[in-house]
Length: 578
Image 1 (cartoon, rainbow, N blue to C red):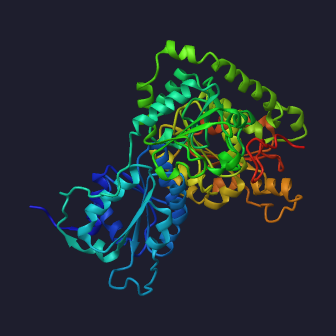
Image 2 (image 1 turned 180 degrees about the vertical axis):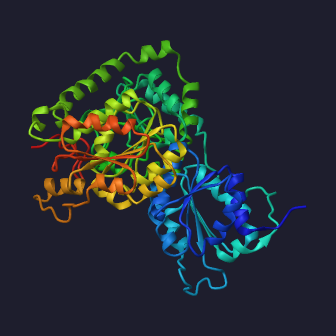
Image 3 (image 1 turned 90 degrees about the vertical axis):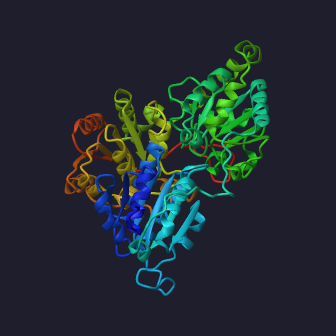
Protein backbone atom coordinates (compact mmCIF):
# COMPACT_ATOMS: atom_id res chain seq x y z
CA UNK A 1 0.00 0.00 0.00
CA UNK A 2 1.30 3.51 -0.71
CA UNK A 3 2.45 5.40 2.35
CA UNK A 4 1.70 8.92 3.44
CA UNK A 5 4.44 11.43 2.72
CA UNK A 6 4.78 15.02 3.77
CA UNK A 7 4.94 17.55 1.00
CA UNK A 8 8.61 18.06 1.85
CA UNK A 9 9.31 14.34 1.49
CA UNK A 10 7.50 14.36 -1.84
CA UNK A 11 9.74 17.22 -2.98
CA UNK A 12 12.85 15.17 -2.19
CA UNK A 13 11.50 12.07 -3.91
CA UNK A 14 10.43 14.08 -6.95
CA UNK A 15 13.96 15.44 -7.35
CA UNK A 16 15.49 11.98 -7.00
CA UNK A 17 13.09 10.59 -9.60
CA UNK A 18 14.32 13.29 -12.02
CA UNK A 19 17.98 12.38 -11.48
CA UNK A 20 18.89 15.33 -9.26
CA UNK A 21 21.64 14.49 -6.79
CA UNK A 22 23.02 17.86 -5.69
CA UNK A 23 21.44 21.17 -4.62
CA UNK A 24 22.84 24.54 -3.57
CA UNK A 25 20.98 26.57 -1.00
CA UNK A 26 20.52 28.45 2.25
CA UNK A 27 17.79 27.44 4.75
CA UNK A 28 15.35 29.71 6.56
CA UNK A 29 11.95 29.78 8.20
CA UNK A 30 9.55 29.06 5.35
CA UNK A 31 11.74 26.39 3.71
CA UNK A 32 12.60 24.55 6.96
CA UNK A 33 10.22 21.60 6.40
CA UNK A 34 12.12 20.78 3.20
CA UNK A 35 15.43 20.83 5.07
CA UNK A 36 13.90 18.62 7.79
CA UNK A 37 12.94 16.06 5.15
CA UNK A 38 16.34 16.26 3.39
CA UNK A 39 17.98 14.47 6.32
CA UNK A 40 16.24 11.22 5.37
CA UNK A 41 17.53 11.49 1.79
CA UNK A 42 21.05 12.71 2.53
CA UNK A 43 22.63 9.66 0.87
CA UNK A 44 20.86 10.49 -2.40
CA UNK A 45 20.63 14.29 -2.29
CA UNK A 46 23.76 16.28 -1.53
CA UNK A 47 23.07 19.73 -0.17
CA UNK A 48 25.78 22.40 -0.51
CA UNK A 49 25.33 25.14 2.09
CA UNK A 50 26.26 28.40 0.40
CA UNK A 51 26.98 31.66 2.19
CA UNK A 52 24.50 33.70 0.14
CA UNK A 53 21.57 32.74 -2.06
CA UNK A 54 23.08 34.57 -5.03
CA UNK A 55 26.08 32.28 -4.63
CA UNK A 56 23.77 29.27 -4.51
CA UNK A 57 22.09 30.33 -7.76
CA UNK A 58 25.37 30.91 -9.60
CA UNK A 59 26.74 27.61 -8.25
CA UNK A 60 23.69 25.84 -9.67
CA UNK A 61 24.33 27.63 -12.98
CA UNK A 62 27.96 26.51 -13.04
CA UNK A 63 26.88 22.94 -12.32
CA UNK A 64 24.30 23.08 -15.12
CA UNK A 65 26.49 24.79 -17.69
CA UNK A 66 29.37 22.35 -17.21
CA UNK A 67 27.22 19.19 -17.24
CA UNK A 68 24.11 19.93 -19.32
CA UNK A 69 22.00 18.73 -16.39
CA UNK A 70 19.60 20.86 -14.40
CA UNK A 71 21.06 22.98 -11.60
CA UNK A 72 19.00 23.29 -8.42
CA UNK A 73 19.09 26.19 -5.97
CA UNK A 74 17.05 26.82 -2.82
CA UNK A 75 16.02 29.88 -0.83
CA UNK A 76 13.56 30.71 1.89
CA UNK A 77 10.82 33.33 1.58
CA UNK A 78 11.42 37.08 1.48
CA UNK A 79 15.10 38.07 1.23
CA UNK A 80 16.14 34.48 0.59
CA UNK A 81 14.25 34.28 -2.68
CA UNK A 82 14.91 37.85 -3.73
CA UNK A 83 18.63 37.05 -3.47
CA UNK A 84 18.01 34.39 -6.12
CA UNK A 85 16.63 36.92 -8.61
CA UNK A 86 20.04 37.80 -10.09
CA UNK A 87 21.11 34.22 -10.92
CA UNK A 88 17.61 33.47 -12.21
CA UNK A 89 17.87 36.45 -14.59
CA UNK A 90 21.38 35.36 -15.54
CA UNK A 91 20.14 31.83 -16.32
CA UNK A 92 17.29 33.23 -18.43
CA UNK A 93 19.63 35.35 -20.54
CA UNK A 94 22.13 32.51 -21.04
CA UNK A 95 19.60 29.67 -21.54
CA UNK A 96 20.77 27.72 -18.49
CA UNK A 97 18.51 24.94 -17.12
CA UNK A 98 17.86 26.00 -13.53
CA UNK A 99 15.28 25.01 -10.91
CA UNK A 100 14.77 27.51 -8.10
CA UNK A 101 12.91 26.02 -5.11
CA UNK A 102 11.48 28.65 -2.79
CA UNK A 103 9.75 28.47 0.56
CA UNK A 104 6.67 30.65 1.01
CA UNK A 105 4.61 31.64 4.04
CA UNK A 106 1.64 29.43 4.91
CA UNK A 107 -1.38 29.70 2.66
CA UNK A 108 -3.51 30.88 5.61
CA UNK A 109 -1.56 34.17 5.76
CA UNK A 110 -0.66 34.47 2.09
CA UNK A 111 -1.39 37.95 0.80
CA UNK A 112 -1.47 39.52 4.27
CA UNK A 113 2.09 40.86 4.38
CA UNK A 114 3.15 38.06 6.72
CA UNK A 115 6.69 37.89 8.10
CA UNK A 116 9.13 37.49 5.18
CA UNK A 117 6.34 37.26 2.61
CA UNK A 118 7.32 38.28 -0.92
CA UNK A 119 5.48 37.68 -4.18
CA UNK A 120 8.39 35.91 -5.85
CA UNK A 121 6.28 34.47 -8.68
CA UNK A 122 5.24 38.01 -9.59
CA UNK A 123 8.81 39.28 -9.32
CA UNK A 124 10.29 36.53 -11.48
CA UNK A 125 7.57 36.19 -14.11
CA UNK A 126 9.59 38.14 -16.74
CA UNK A 127 12.82 36.21 -16.03
CA UNK A 128 11.62 32.59 -15.90
CA UNK A 129 10.36 30.21 -18.54
CA UNK A 130 7.56 29.39 -16.12
CA UNK A 131 6.86 29.57 -12.40
CA UNK A 132 4.47 28.04 -9.89
CA UNK A 133 2.88 28.86 -6.55
CA UNK A 134 2.00 25.53 -4.90
CA UNK A 135 -0.45 25.52 -2.00
CA UNK A 136 -1.41 21.83 -1.98
CA UNK A 137 0.91 18.90 -1.22
CA UNK A 138 -1.09 16.79 -3.69
CA UNK A 139 0.14 18.95 -6.57
CA UNK A 140 3.86 18.56 -5.88
CA UNK A 141 4.65 15.36 -7.87
CA UNK A 142 3.19 16.77 -11.07
CA UNK A 143 4.57 20.29 -10.60
CA UNK A 144 8.16 19.09 -10.05
CA UNK A 145 7.99 16.78 -13.07
CA UNK A 146 6.57 19.50 -15.30
CA UNK A 147 8.94 22.19 -14.02
CA UNK A 148 12.07 20.16 -14.72
CA UNK A 149 10.73 19.16 -18.14
CA UNK A 150 10.16 22.80 -19.07
CA UNK A 151 13.54 23.92 -17.71
CA UNK A 152 15.52 21.31 -19.64
CA UNK A 153 13.69 21.07 -22.98
CA UNK A 154 13.39 23.39 -25.95
CA UNK A 155 15.47 26.45 -25.21
CA UNK A 156 16.58 25.68 -21.63
CA UNK A 157 16.05 28.20 -18.89
CA UNK A 158 15.06 28.82 -15.27
CA UNK A 159 11.82 27.62 -13.67
CA UNK A 160 10.76 28.60 -10.16
CA UNK A 161 8.55 26.67 -7.74
CA UNK A 162 7.26 28.64 -4.75
CA UNK A 163 5.77 26.32 -2.12
CA UNK A 164 3.80 27.37 0.95
CA UNK A 165 5.05 26.07 4.28
CA UNK A 166 1.81 24.25 5.09
CA UNK A 167 1.96 22.43 1.73
CA UNK A 168 5.37 21.09 2.74
CA UNK A 169 4.08 20.03 6.17
CA UNK A 170 0.85 18.33 5.10
CA UNK A 171 0.87 14.52 4.73
CA UNK A 172 -0.76 12.91 1.67
CA UNK A 173 -0.43 9.78 -0.41
CA UNK A 174 1.52 10.96 -3.47
CA UNK A 175 0.30 10.05 -6.94
CA UNK A 176 3.24 9.36 -9.25
CA UNK A 177 1.10 7.84 -11.99
CA UNK A 178 0.42 10.68 -14.40
CA UNK A 179 1.34 12.01 -17.84
CA UNK A 180 2.48 15.53 -18.55
CA UNK A 181 -0.16 17.64 -20.22
CA UNK A 182 1.40 20.65 -21.95
CA UNK A 183 -0.64 21.24 -25.11
CA UNK A 184 0.85 24.69 -25.72
CA UNK A 185 4.45 23.66 -25.20
CA UNK A 186 5.84 21.77 -28.18
CA UNK A 187 9.44 22.70 -29.02
CA UNK A 188 10.41 21.97 -32.60
CA UNK A 189 13.61 19.93 -32.54
CA UNK A 190 14.06 18.97 -36.18
CA UNK A 191 13.58 21.99 -38.40
CA UNK A 192 11.77 22.23 -41.71
CA UNK A 193 13.43 19.96 -44.26
CA UNK A 194 12.71 22.28 -47.18
CA UNK A 195 14.36 25.19 -45.39
CA UNK A 196 17.31 22.99 -44.40
CA UNK A 197 17.87 22.08 -48.05
CA UNK A 198 17.63 25.72 -49.09
CA UNK A 199 20.23 26.63 -46.46
CA UNK A 200 22.55 23.94 -47.78
CA UNK A 201 22.06 25.16 -51.35
CA UNK A 202 22.97 28.72 -50.39
CA UNK A 203 26.06 27.63 -48.48
CA UNK A 204 27.23 25.25 -51.21
CA UNK A 205 27.02 27.97 -53.88
CA UNK A 206 28.37 30.85 -51.75
CA UNK A 207 31.67 32.44 -52.63
CA UNK A 208 32.22 33.92 -49.18
CA UNK A 209 30.33 31.69 -46.72
CA UNK A 210 30.69 32.07 -42.98
CA UNK A 211 29.41 30.18 -39.92
CA UNK A 212 28.66 31.75 -36.54
CA UNK A 213 28.46 29.11 -33.81
CA UNK A 214 26.64 30.09 -30.63
CA UNK A 215 25.58 28.67 -27.29
CA UNK A 216 23.03 26.37 -28.92
CA UNK A 217 25.82 24.30 -30.48
CA UNK A 218 27.33 23.64 -27.06
CA UNK A 219 24.01 23.02 -25.32
CA UNK A 220 22.76 20.56 -27.93
CA UNK A 221 26.02 18.61 -27.96
CA UNK A 222 26.63 19.44 -31.63
CA UNK A 223 30.36 20.18 -31.58
CA UNK A 224 31.41 17.15 -33.63
CA UNK A 225 28.65 17.73 -36.17
CA UNK A 226 29.63 21.39 -36.49
CA UNK A 227 33.26 20.52 -37.13
CA UNK A 228 32.41 17.86 -39.73
CA UNK A 229 29.93 20.18 -41.45
CA UNK A 230 32.43 23.05 -41.62
CA UNK A 231 35.17 20.75 -42.90
CA UNK A 232 33.01 19.24 -45.64
CA UNK A 233 31.90 22.66 -46.89
CA UNK A 234 35.28 24.29 -46.09
CA UNK A 235 33.51 27.18 -44.39
CA UNK A 236 35.30 29.26 -41.73
CA UNK A 237 33.72 29.36 -38.26
CA UNK A 238 33.37 32.26 -35.84
CA UNK A 239 32.45 31.41 -32.24
CA UNK A 240 30.44 33.74 -29.99
CA UNK A 241 31.39 34.21 -26.34
CA UNK A 242 29.17 31.26 -25.37
CA UNK A 243 30.10 29.33 -28.51
CA UNK A 244 33.76 29.15 -27.45
CA UNK A 245 34.79 25.50 -27.24
CA UNK A 246 32.29 24.35 -29.87
CA UNK A 247 35.19 23.94 -32.30
CA UNK A 248 38.82 23.75 -31.16
CA UNK A 249 40.73 27.01 -31.17
CA UNK A 250 43.53 25.23 -33.01
CA UNK A 251 41.28 24.16 -35.90
CA UNK A 252 42.35 25.87 -39.16
CA UNK A 253 38.75 26.97 -39.84
CA UNK A 254 38.31 28.68 -36.45
CA UNK A 255 38.49 32.49 -36.75
CA UNK A 256 37.87 33.34 -33.09
CA UNK A 257 35.29 35.65 -31.55
CA UNK A 258 33.25 38.41 -33.26
CA UNK A 259 31.57 41.52 -31.93
CA UNK A 260 32.38 44.38 -29.59
CA UNK A 261 35.71 42.93 -28.47
CA UNK A 262 36.06 40.37 -31.23
CA UNK A 263 38.92 40.21 -33.69
CA UNK A 264 39.06 42.67 -36.57
CA UNK A 265 39.39 39.90 -39.17
CA UNK A 266 36.33 38.11 -37.75
CA UNK A 267 34.20 41.24 -37.92
CA UNK A 268 35.44 42.14 -41.37
CA UNK A 269 34.63 38.62 -42.56
CA UNK A 270 31.05 39.12 -41.34
CA UNK A 271 30.82 42.43 -43.16
CA UNK A 272 32.13 40.90 -46.41
CA UNK A 273 30.48 37.46 -46.45
CA UNK A 274 27.72 36.62 -48.93
CA UNK A 275 26.05 33.83 -46.89
CA UNK A 276 26.02 33.88 -43.10
CA UNK A 277 24.97 30.71 -41.30
CA UNK A 278 24.19 31.40 -37.63
CA UNK A 279 23.59 28.23 -35.68
CA UNK A 280 22.62 28.49 -32.02
CA UNK A 281 23.39 32.19 -31.62
CA UNK A 282 20.81 34.91 -31.05
CA UNK A 283 22.41 37.90 -32.80
CA UNK A 284 23.00 39.68 -29.52
CA UNK A 285 23.86 43.37 -29.82
CA UNK A 286 27.38 42.67 -28.51
CA UNK A 287 27.86 40.55 -31.65
CA UNK A 288 26.06 42.70 -34.21
CA UNK A 289 26.98 46.22 -33.13
CA UNK A 290 24.57 48.52 -34.96
CA UNK A 291 22.18 45.85 -36.26
CA UNK A 292 21.11 47.77 -39.38
CA UNK A 293 24.71 47.67 -40.65
CA UNK A 294 25.41 44.04 -39.76
CA UNK A 295 26.44 41.64 -42.58
CA UNK A 296 25.15 44.00 -45.29
CA UNK A 297 25.98 41.71 -48.24
CA UNK A 298 24.85 38.41 -46.73
CA UNK A 299 21.90 36.15 -47.13
CA UNK A 300 21.34 35.11 -43.53
CA UNK A 301 20.44 31.60 -42.39
CA UNK A 302 19.44 31.42 -38.73
CA UNK A 303 19.03 28.16 -36.80
CA UNK A 304 17.55 28.51 -33.32
CA UNK A 305 15.30 26.35 -31.19
CA UNK A 306 13.50 29.46 -29.97
CA UNK A 307 11.37 30.85 -32.82
CA UNK A 308 11.09 34.24 -31.10
CA UNK A 309 14.82 34.84 -31.67
CA UNK A 310 14.65 34.44 -35.44
CA UNK A 311 14.26 37.78 -37.18
CA UNK A 312 14.23 39.65 -33.87
CA UNK A 313 17.48 41.55 -34.39
CA UNK A 314 18.67 40.69 -37.92
CA UNK A 315 16.64 40.13 -41.09
CA UNK A 316 16.77 36.44 -42.03
CA UNK A 317 16.61 34.87 -45.50
CA UNK A 318 16.21 31.25 -44.35
CA UNK A 319 14.71 30.72 -40.87
CA UNK A 320 15.13 27.25 -39.35
CA UNK A 321 13.50 26.48 -36.00
CA UNK A 322 15.16 23.42 -34.51
CA UNK A 323 17.81 21.91 -32.28
CA UNK A 324 21.32 22.68 -33.52
CA UNK A 325 22.51 19.08 -33.50
CA UNK A 326 19.44 17.73 -35.29
CA UNK A 327 19.64 20.42 -37.95
CA UNK A 328 23.35 19.76 -38.52
CA UNK A 329 22.67 16.03 -38.81
CA UNK A 330 20.01 16.76 -41.45
CA UNK A 331 22.41 19.06 -43.31
CA UNK A 332 25.11 16.36 -43.28
CA UNK A 333 22.60 13.80 -44.52
CA UNK A 334 21.74 15.99 -47.54
CA UNK A 335 25.33 17.04 -48.21
CA UNK A 336 26.44 16.92 -51.86
CA UNK A 337 29.22 14.49 -52.75
CA UNK A 338 32.82 15.57 -52.29
CA UNK A 339 33.26 15.71 -56.08
CA UNK A 340 30.32 18.11 -56.37
CA UNK A 341 31.61 20.20 -53.49
CA UNK A 342 35.08 20.37 -55.03
CA UNK A 343 33.61 21.81 -58.22
CA UNK A 344 31.55 24.34 -56.27
CA UNK A 345 34.27 25.37 -53.86
CA UNK A 346 37.25 26.24 -56.00
CA UNK A 347 37.07 29.67 -54.35
CA UNK A 348 37.07 28.41 -50.74
CA UNK A 349 40.83 28.65 -50.29
CA UNK A 350 40.85 32.18 -51.73
CA UNK A 351 38.23 33.33 -49.19
CA UNK A 352 40.10 31.76 -46.29
CA UNK A 353 43.40 33.19 -47.49
CA UNK A 354 41.81 36.64 -47.67
CA UNK A 355 40.59 36.38 -44.07
CA UNK A 356 44.00 35.20 -42.84
CA UNK A 357 45.62 38.13 -44.66
CA UNK A 358 43.25 40.43 -42.75
CA UNK A 359 44.26 38.69 -39.55
CA UNK A 360 47.96 39.18 -40.24
CA UNK A 361 47.37 42.83 -41.10
CA UNK A 362 45.32 43.73 -38.03
CA UNK A 363 46.45 41.32 -35.30
CA UNK A 364 49.92 42.82 -35.24
CA UNK A 365 48.45 46.09 -33.95
CA UNK A 366 47.32 44.40 -30.74
CA UNK A 367 49.18 45.21 -27.56
CA UNK A 368 49.84 41.58 -26.65
CA UNK A 369 51.73 41.23 -29.96
CA UNK A 370 53.66 44.46 -29.49
CA UNK A 371 56.10 44.04 -26.63
CA UNK A 372 57.41 47.57 -26.98
CA UNK A 373 53.99 48.86 -25.88
CA UNK A 374 54.34 47.04 -22.56
CA UNK A 375 58.05 47.25 -21.88
CA UNK A 376 57.61 49.83 -19.12
CA UNK A 377 54.91 47.80 -17.34
CA UNK A 378 55.87 45.75 -14.31
CA UNK A 379 53.09 43.25 -15.00
CA UNK A 380 51.08 43.56 -18.24
CA UNK A 381 47.83 41.57 -17.91
CA UNK A 382 48.53 39.79 -21.20
CA UNK A 383 51.53 38.06 -19.61
CA UNK A 384 49.20 36.35 -17.13
CA UNK A 385 47.14 34.92 -19.99
CA UNK A 386 50.28 33.76 -21.83
CA UNK A 387 51.31 31.73 -18.80
CA UNK A 388 47.84 30.32 -18.19
CA UNK A 389 47.61 29.40 -21.88
CA UNK A 390 50.86 27.45 -21.65
CA UNK A 391 49.62 25.66 -18.54
CA UNK A 392 46.25 24.78 -20.10
CA UNK A 393 47.99 23.45 -23.21
CA UNK A 394 50.05 21.06 -21.07
CA UNK A 395 47.25 20.18 -18.66
CA UNK A 396 44.09 19.88 -20.75
CA UNK A 397 41.84 18.47 -18.04
CA UNK A 398 40.33 21.81 -17.02
CA UNK A 399 37.29 24.06 -17.01
CA UNK A 400 37.80 27.82 -17.13
CA UNK A 401 35.26 30.09 -15.40
CA UNK A 402 35.43 33.84 -15.93
CA UNK A 403 33.69 36.77 -14.29
CA UNK A 404 32.63 39.91 -16.14
CA UNK A 405 34.84 42.74 -17.35
CA UNK A 406 38.15 43.33 -19.06
CA UNK A 407 39.66 40.09 -17.76
CA UNK A 408 36.71 38.20 -19.30
CA UNK A 409 37.35 39.64 -22.76
CA UNK A 410 41.10 39.02 -22.53
CA UNK A 411 40.36 35.39 -21.64
CA UNK A 412 38.02 35.01 -24.61
CA UNK A 413 40.55 36.64 -26.94
CA UNK A 414 43.85 35.23 -25.74
CA UNK A 415 43.24 31.75 -24.35
CA UNK A 416 43.20 28.73 -26.66
CA UNK A 417 40.21 26.57 -25.78
CA UNK A 418 41.03 23.13 -27.12
CA UNK A 419 39.59 20.94 -24.35
CA UNK A 420 36.12 20.69 -25.91
CA UNK A 421 32.71 22.16 -25.21
CA UNK A 422 31.54 23.15 -21.71
CA UNK A 423 35.08 24.11 -20.69
CA UNK A 424 34.48 27.87 -20.96
CA UNK A 425 31.86 29.09 -18.49
CA UNK A 426 30.97 32.77 -18.20
CA UNK A 427 28.06 35.16 -17.74
CA UNK A 428 27.11 36.60 -21.11
CA UNK A 429 23.67 38.13 -21.61
CA UNK A 430 23.25 39.56 -18.12
CA UNK A 431 27.01 40.07 -17.63
CA UNK A 432 26.75 39.48 -13.89
CA UNK A 433 29.74 40.62 -11.88
CA UNK A 434 30.34 38.16 -9.05
CA UNK A 435 29.40 35.15 -11.20
CA UNK A 436 32.74 33.36 -11.29
CA UNK A 437 33.64 32.18 -7.77
CA UNK A 438 30.24 30.63 -6.94
CA UNK A 439 29.89 29.26 -10.50
CA UNK A 440 33.29 27.61 -10.07
CA UNK A 441 31.97 26.00 -6.89
CA UNK A 442 29.20 24.38 -8.94
CA UNK A 443 31.63 23.30 -11.65
CA UNK A 444 33.99 21.80 -9.07
CA UNK A 445 31.18 19.82 -7.43
CA UNK A 446 30.28 18.40 -10.86
CA UNK A 447 33.89 17.78 -11.96
CA UNK A 448 36.16 16.96 -9.01
CA UNK A 449 38.60 15.35 -11.45
CA UNK A 450 39.25 18.60 -13.36
CA UNK A 451 41.19 21.74 -12.49
CA UNK A 452 38.74 24.63 -12.29
CA UNK A 453 40.58 27.81 -13.23
CA UNK A 454 38.80 31.04 -12.30
CA UNK A 455 39.74 34.35 -13.91
CA UNK A 456 38.08 37.33 -12.26
CA UNK A 457 38.60 41.02 -11.66
CA UNK A 458 39.08 42.65 -8.27
CA UNK A 459 35.60 44.18 -8.63
CA UNK A 460 33.60 41.02 -9.31
CA UNK A 461 35.68 39.01 -6.85
CA UNK A 462 34.70 41.30 -3.99
CA UNK A 463 31.00 40.76 -4.70
CA UNK A 464 30.78 37.03 -3.96
CA UNK A 465 34.08 35.85 -2.50
CA UNK A 466 32.31 34.58 0.61
CA UNK A 467 31.74 31.33 -1.28
CA UNK A 468 35.42 30.57 -0.66
CA UNK A 469 34.21 29.43 2.77
CA UNK A 470 31.72 27.06 1.10
CA UNK A 471 34.51 25.58 -1.03
CA UNK A 472 36.51 24.81 2.12
CA UNK A 473 33.52 23.40 4.02
CA UNK A 474 32.73 21.08 1.09
CA UNK A 475 36.32 19.82 0.94
CA UNK A 476 36.78 21.06 -2.63
CA UNK A 477 40.45 21.19 -3.67
CA UNK A 478 40.44 21.78 -7.42
CA UNK A 479 39.51 25.51 -7.61
CA UNK A 480 42.32 27.94 -8.53
CA UNK A 481 41.31 31.62 -8.56
CA UNK A 482 43.32 34.21 -10.49
CA UNK A 483 42.42 37.81 -9.65
CA UNK A 484 43.40 40.26 -12.39
CA UNK A 485 43.75 43.12 -9.93
CA UNK A 486 44.06 46.58 -11.49
CA UNK A 487 42.44 48.66 -8.74
CA UNK A 488 39.57 49.76 -10.96
CA UNK A 489 36.22 48.67 -12.23
CA UNK A 490 38.26 48.22 -15.36
CA UNK A 491 35.78 48.01 -18.21
CA UNK A 492 33.83 51.04 -16.97
CA UNK A 493 37.11 52.92 -16.51
CA UNK A 494 38.05 52.06 -20.10
CA UNK A 495 34.84 53.64 -21.40
CA UNK A 496 35.45 56.68 -19.20
CA UNK A 497 38.95 57.03 -20.63
CA UNK A 498 37.97 56.62 -24.27
CA UNK A 499 34.63 58.41 -24.37
CA UNK A 500 34.27 60.53 -21.22
CA UNK A 501 37.52 62.49 -21.11
CA UNK A 502 39.00 60.33 -18.33
CA UNK A 503 36.33 61.31 -15.83
CA UNK A 504 36.94 58.34 -13.53
CA UNK A 505 33.74 58.67 -11.56
CA UNK A 506 33.07 55.74 -9.23
CA UNK A 507 35.65 53.42 -10.80
CA UNK A 508 38.84 53.58 -8.65
CA UNK A 509 38.54 50.52 -6.43
CA UNK A 510 40.26 49.61 -3.18
CA UNK A 511 40.37 46.16 -1.68
CA UNK A 512 41.94 44.02 1.01
CA UNK A 513 45.14 42.05 0.73
CA UNK A 514 43.63 39.25 -1.33
CA UNK A 515 46.33 36.69 -0.48
CA UNK A 516 45.79 37.26 3.25
CA UNK A 517 42.02 37.10 2.72
CA UNK A 518 42.53 33.72 1.03
CA UNK A 519 44.57 32.52 3.99
CA UNK A 520 41.84 33.68 6.36
CA UNK A 521 39.52 31.33 4.43
CA UNK A 522 42.14 28.54 4.75
CA UNK A 523 43.14 28.80 1.11
CA UNK A 524 46.68 29.19 -0.16
CA UNK A 525 47.26 32.83 -1.11
CA UNK A 526 49.92 34.14 -3.51
CA UNK A 527 50.70 37.72 -4.57
CA UNK A 528 52.39 38.39 -7.92
CA UNK A 529 53.69 41.82 -8.95
CA UNK A 530 56.21 40.96 -11.71
CA UNK A 531 56.04 39.09 -15.01
CA UNK A 532 59.00 36.96 -13.95
CA UNK A 533 56.92 35.38 -11.17
CA UNK A 534 53.74 34.64 -13.10
CA UNK A 535 54.45 31.14 -14.41
CA UNK A 536 55.95 30.04 -11.09
CA UNK A 537 52.78 31.10 -9.27
CA UNK A 538 50.50 29.29 -11.73
CA UNK A 539 52.62 26.15 -11.53
CA UNK A 540 52.49 26.30 -7.73
CA UNK A 541 48.71 26.70 -7.79
CA UNK A 542 48.34 23.68 -10.08
CA UNK A 543 50.62 21.57 -7.86
CA UNK A 544 48.83 22.52 -4.63
CA UNK A 545 46.39 19.96 -3.25
CA UNK A 546 43.76 22.48 -2.29
CA UNK A 547 42.16 25.77 -3.39
CA UNK A 548 44.52 28.59 -4.31
CA UNK A 549 44.11 32.31 -4.94
CA UNK A 550 46.69 34.29 -6.91
CA UNK A 551 46.49 38.07 -6.74
CA UNK A 552 48.01 39.35 -9.98
CA UNK A 553 48.62 43.04 -9.42
CA UNK A 554 48.65 44.09 -13.06
CA UNK A 555 49.23 47.44 -14.75
CA UNK A 556 46.26 49.61 -13.78
CA UNK A 557 45.23 51.33 -17.01
CA UNK A 558 45.44 48.79 -19.81
CA UNK A 559 42.53 48.63 -22.25
CA UNK A 560 40.85 45.80 -24.15
CA UNK A 561 41.19 46.14 -27.89
CA UNK A 562 39.80 45.81 -30.49
CA UNK A 563 36.61 47.60 -29.49
CA UNK A 564 33.43 48.63 -31.26
CA UNK A 565 32.10 51.94 -29.88
CA UNK A 566 28.45 52.17 -28.89
CA UNK A 567 25.98 52.50 -31.81
CA UNK A 568 28.70 51.80 -34.37
CA UNK A 569 29.01 49.10 -36.99
CA UNK A 570 31.29 46.17 -36.23
CA UNK A 571 33.23 47.38 -39.25
CA UNK A 572 34.19 50.54 -37.30
CA UNK A 573 36.55 49.22 -34.65
CA UNK A 574 39.09 50.94 -32.46
CA UNK A 575 42.05 48.64 -32.94
CA UNK A 576 44.57 49.95 -30.45
CA UNK A 577 45.64 52.90 -28.33
CA UNK A 578 45.75 56.14 -30.33
